[in-house]
Length: 325
Image (tube, rainbow, N blue to C red; front, top):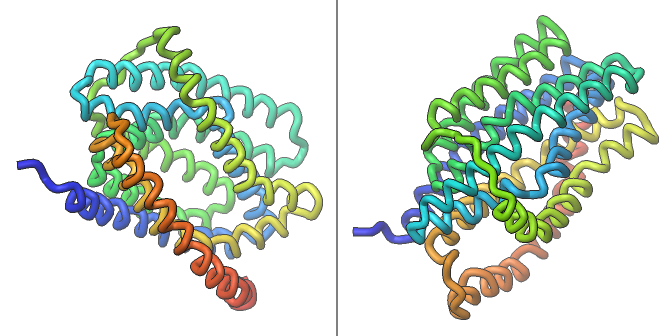
């Protein structure tokens, strides 16, 4: 007997939320201690460099998201071979693209960045591109297969490793943070590779690639705009103020993470579960039930929630600024 959809969503959400909660507390504690140990300037330099990790999306054309969307839908229809081809094509594209991005960023950092600490930070980011590749791809596959138990384990592992870096950074300084971050990314990739649902194969089809690009273009524009607006503030502060201000700003922004935690966990689970169940359907009642009505409900709920957040954030930020910094 097939498990009811709402039960699957509830179980998957609990698994996803559990892992993300552990990861959040680890990132929160690590962010605080990193800033305390390193000081606002060094912490700010690292936070500025980390912005460019998210900018790798510029070169992916949002193909990984299209893969995640179509992979689960095609498998639900029994078209496993087509789903595997899309997964292999995206893997091949990223496999050849990622080292080029990494090498370009590392060379740029070596020859064109004068600030020594920023140079090391950007080189580290370039190394992260390569070391987290398999981990990122495995994460997408796990979501596409609704394997939230694996995602939970990966998040908990990442959280534990992040906590373990705190004493290392305390005794060894910022360079140990760079090394630890790359090592964690490698361990994460090894974890996903060991738990891969199938072998990763090289595959290319120009016709399929062009079709995916056409589908991904609107998503690509959305991803680019959201990525820029989500990170450009740190770059502006670094450019027109200094890295110390970026450090203060980054630490205070940690309070936003709990607000995102519940929403992000639920949205990921809901998207893949509904896509698996109804993604192949074009019926009006399905679109209305799972797209139009939820957005109407959210449009009513979010304004007051955002209003409360606007009221509460200033005293919360002030508390952290005065009592922690």
